[in-house]
Length: 124
Image (cartoon, rainbow, N blue to C red; front, side, top):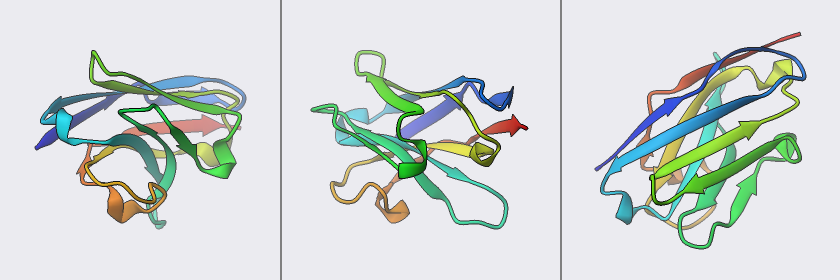
C-alpha cells in the first residue's frame, strides 16, 4: 500500500500562485508515476499533471500547460505542483495520486492510490 498526504491548498486571487505538495509513504518503490487530478462538485475527476518516477517525464492537461509545473523529489518521496497565473476555473479539490501501472495517465482509472484532497479556491 501507498499512503499519500497533500498540503498547500488555499484561497488565492486570480493571477496568483500556490504550490501543492504530496508526501508519499509505504511501498513507494512499486509506483511508476505520481500525479494530480482535480474535481469540482457535480463533475468527474479530471487529470491535471503527472510525472514518472524513473525518467521524470511529465504530462499536462492542455488547460494548465505553461502555468503549472509538476516536479518530484525522489529522496523525499514528495511530488509538487507549482501553480502560477491561477484562474477561477482552476478552483477544485486537488487530489494527489500514484500508480503502479503504465498507460494513459490522463485516464482516472489508471491511478491506484489517492490522497484525501486539498481545496484550491481562486477568486476573481
